[in-house]
Length: 322
Image 1: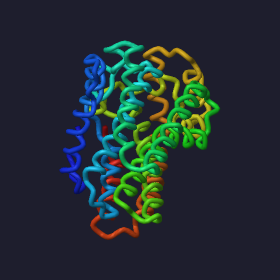
Image 2: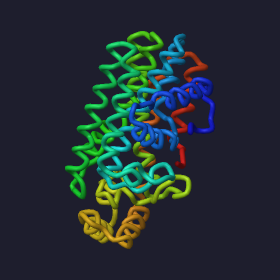
Image 3: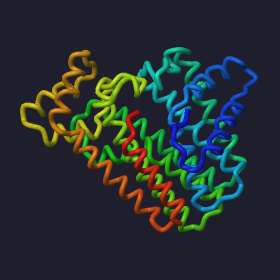
Image 4: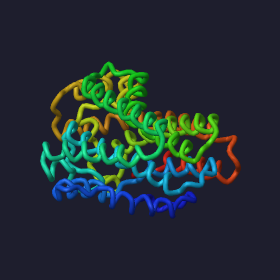
C-alpha cells in the first residue's frame, strides 16, 4: 500500500496498483499465487512514486506509459526483495511471513525471476533507453548483493565501501525509475540527468534511514524485527561509525560481536545498545540529511509546483519511521 500522502500522483498510483494486480497472470496458477502474495503485501511504493513524480516534473502527458514504467520498476524491485530474503534468511517482510519462509526456497527463486521477467515485459514496451537504464540498475543490484555477501561480518568495512554498496543495491534502481519517468515524459537531456541524480542521492538517503530504523525503529511500524542487519552480518553505516568513533571498550566489544558469523539474541540486543550509546544513529542521520540536501539541489531549477513536490518527497523519505 502506498504511503498516505498525496504528492500530486494519487490517481496515477491507483493505476499502478491496478496494473500490478493484472500483470501477474501465469498459466501456472501457483506461480501467480506466490507473485501476488509478494506484491499484495504492499510496501511504500517508493520507486513508482519517484517515477511518477519525475514524469510529472517534466510535464509528461502519456500517463499510460508512465504507469507501465512505474509498474515495471516495482515488479523488478519486488522480485529483488524475494531474492534478498532468500540470501538473508529473512522471516518477515512488510509485516507478513516472507515469501521464502512461506513458499520454500526453490519456488521463491522462480517467483523472483518471474517478477523480473514481468517487469521487463511491461517496461520493454517503452523505449530502448528506458530498458537500458533499468537493465543497468539490475546488473548493479546483482553485483551489490554478491559484494554484500562477500563483506558480511567484515569489520574493516569503510564508509566508502558502504556507500558503494548502498548505491548498487538501492540507489541505482531508484535513479533508474527517476530517469525512466523523465524519459517517458519526454523531458530534456538536462532534466533527465538532474532527475536521475535526484533519484541516486534520494536512494542513498533512503538506505541510510533504513539502516537507522533497523537500530532504533518501532518493530510494529517496520513490520519486522530490529537488528536484522546485525543478525545477517551486514556492516551498516551505523556500525562503521560506532566502530570508528566509539570509546575503545565499546569498539572492542562491538567488534567482537559483529565479526561472528552466528550471533545469539543477547549479542544482537547488546550490539544495538552499543551502537545507540556510541551516537551512531545521530551521526548517520546527519549523513542522510547531507544526501537529502544533494537531492533537493538537483531539482531547484524546476518550476515551483513540481519543485515543491519533489522536495517534500525528500523530506518524507528523510523523516519516515517505517
